[in-house]
Amino acid sequence: MTAIRLLVWKDLVLELRTKEILTAMAVFSMLVAVVFGFAFSPSPDDAVRLLPGMLWVTLVFAATMGLSRSFVLEREQECLEGLRLFPIDRSAIYIGKALANLVFLFAVEVLLLPALAAISGVSLLPRLFPLLAVLVLGTIGLVAVGTLFSAMSVHTRIREVLLPVLMLPLAAPVLISGTKAMQGLLAGRLWADVLPGIRILGAFDVIFGVIGYLVFEYVLEE
Amino acid sequence: MKTRDWRAAVIALGGILAVTGLAMATLYAPEEKTMGDAQRIFYLHVPSAWIGFLAFGVVFVSSIAYLATRRRAFDLAAAASTEVGVVFTTLAIASGAVWGRYAWGTWWSWDPRLTTTFMLWFIYVVSLMVRAYGGTGNQPSKFAAVLGIVGFLDIPLIHLSVVWWRSLHPLPVVVRPEGFGSGLHPAMLQTLLVNLAAFTLLYVALFSIRRAQMTAMDALVTRRDESYQPAGVDLPAASLEVR
Image (cartoon, rainbow over all chains, first blue to last red; front, side, top):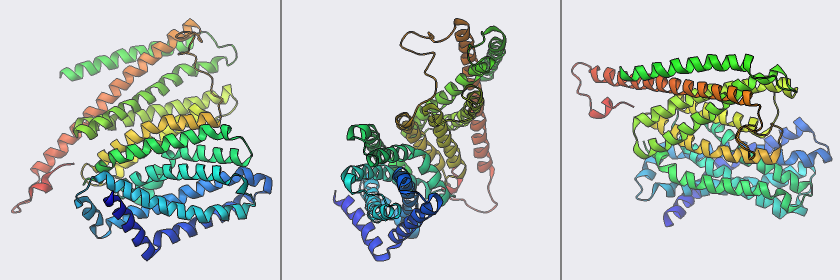
């Protein structure tokens, strides 16, 4: 437990001192949101339908960007070597990195959600808590597979290119269910109508959290 | 030479069945009521899709076995099955698109089974990429194994989420609650089964040939590295290890 806390602490301190990942992710996600605005120039009616898709695509892009940095940092100056020598269960490193990535992504969402709502003119407030529940579940899923793939792709020759092509097909359930559930909520559907999507998101989080935890040590080996 | 014999037998039997299956599909099976002759692509489409899924099942099992035992043989099995699986899934998608053009009037629709198969195809193409560009030593094998496990488990979730999203694909006609094959004319079912058997034998043959090729390639690399001894240099043991 202490080990995990230390690992998260290390990433957060590093980030607070450099502010590299957060700045890049935040600026990039805002830009993508603005570009979506140009591309679709949605009328208020369209916006309700388009906003969830815009949000999730932006999030997946931002997550891919932040996650690829996550292990590149560890690679510089042989940090990963140090982590490997650390006398703890290798899976603890997965949990630590995933939690840190989760914090970064939540921070981006805190900015992105109001910005997207303002740009598209959709009011999120009436259904804020259900929307946040969908967002949190989906984000956990993205980070669960993303952390694993980030550790994988950093060892390959084409690392920046490989992570997105790994992430997008594997995160498809999150994209589909997250978008559809949010569309349902924004269209004023009942909670029961979006429940199947929420269940899929929950199942995704549990399955890939556990799988990531189990197979991470194989990814970390030299 | 024993192994070559059984492989040759499988290929011969598969070839005979494939020709029979093709003849049955074009001559023996009755014409379908609404789709006409276009429906005959069914006898190619369903076996291809079946082999695609079978191949990825083999990848899943071999990947787990490889991570658990670290035996190169399981990794080669996963690699061979991925390649053959990608080919058959491509065939299934292409034949499905042509059939869809005639039956539905569109090349593509975002139906659950189409979308799931397409995503499956993507995941295993990426797996080929991981093998081709993966890191050093046996890392590509391990990464591909991890992807083989994660990808296979992802398929049901993708399917569920697309089902929740929309549905258009015809309902299953072979395995259904009213009994095996009850949705099909008997002659159609016989034709389908012959084609399924032919494709399965084809898969077994392609898979074992490809695996044997990869094993031979491995042995070749080992030999070459063993004989590579620069004059007057004492190589550390590690540099002689082969991936």
